Length: 308
Image (cartoon, rainbow, N blue to C red):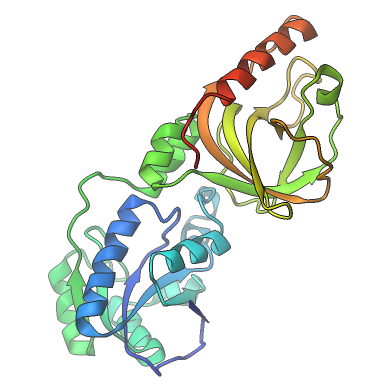
């Protein structure tokens, strides 16, 4: 897929594009992308996405910027899997924020050869706050871009709703809304190595991108992919403060017990896909009680749960 950065003019091809943040590239986004792809085939135009290097709220309301469902790299990869051939990555800054809808349309036509713009049912752009498709359509005709509206996706899925699901441990609902299993990627770092003393060695994960949304505290069934070994294992992952073995108000950690794996992966990158929420994190009266519960957790993780 061709990645075009801000001010990287490219009018060698004629494009059809859809604009949005596409955080999560969830089922609603894919419905919109599928519509755009079908229009691209009919019109012999290159299917493209116009998106942003940072969330627009970073400029508009910096104190309300949400954590992201997908990193930029993840988003680009998923868009490519959907068939998108060009990704136009704009910097959402004060200059872009001040652009009117007409100025935005003129820019994407002159700089990127966008001949057709598909807008979602609730899509809005431009500082002039146009609130009807007919006005966008009229502006497009004046500028020289055909503006078409995609059908409404019936489920009401949106990125903010998925974030709320993650914050409430609703992993099954999250994965259903996304159309794939939610994941995090990070490096394995040294922890206190207490797990191995009780028969449950864990890998402590330091997530690569601090903008990535981490699910709520608790215990989860996960799949752990170890890229340098090209292998995937079942695991049980804890997000929390480890109240049985750590001090009060300890920093939140992410640690995964990789079932039937005993290799050394310190310093290596792993990818973790969330399959199911098992239980809340809670303190236990003794290490024996903790071990008993971890044994039950491992049995739950090893059930014939569909892989991601």
